[in-house]
Length: 390
Ligand SMILES: [Zn+2]
Image (cartoon, rainbow, N blue to C red; front, side):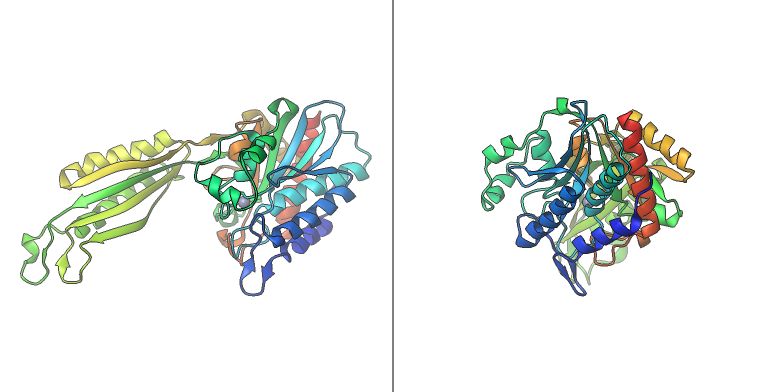
């Protein structure tokens, strides 16, 4: 059974026109009229593919093909975009799922398990909160801060509770997604088999020095908090890189105090963000960093520990077997970005596969994945479904 890339790519382009603005990108925020138009298009595609469709009380679109067993194989991703985003992020996983169903139907394939293609709403989180749709679907608690935003769109806790599904009715979840990073493109690898989604650790760092007159204090008599900070951050990056080449370490926010051109910085505050295969691996870096600089005025306070997501080993193995049978190169990797699979993994055995993002760029109008890579990704999805259906 072979997928039809022309047909799939046309669907990606057609959906990509909804909410598209020249030189800007796609803006299809959840609960907007553009979003609804996008859902209509996808719903029609689902129905033409023989799926029975349903929009749940929070706006997730579900298309279902019945089977003999009562445990469904679910496939999906999200249909919303960031403001001025690209046309592949999220949409690919949903449209590829529909293409797989079309191919199964055309070939008269009798699926044992029901197949559900899910277009989650509000994954990007710019309207209500990140991965809101899949949280509701799986019963993962939503953030307190989401509630007033929900109400603006006519949703309440009742809608949230009613969207919750029964995990007993699912066998597994598969998500095909663009990588959104440059690893696959840079190594010309067509497929990433995702081990898990990184754990995120954030610390607020404070470095104390002594504020003083910038003119009358000679260089050897200064305790400049920013000069110390620069040294510390350079070393932090080294520690992180030496510990684990796959960990990402970022300092993206900094405040220099008192913040005057003619005053030696007396205090610097910055946020350290680490993303790695486990939050304990992140903590090891922080411990070593603190050990090296505790005597130089460094104070650290943890502000976020978001646990890593471990994806299902058996499904990962199935996907790897399919790659080998298809004779395509793949790379096992962690996802540095969050996905609906984070919630789905708590609900049913889940796995993800990535295809290359050209130049590693996404959430942008220049986001691009090549038809040949999309074809490999969708074929791998199809072959994995068939293997899991056995
Ligand atoms: Zn996405």
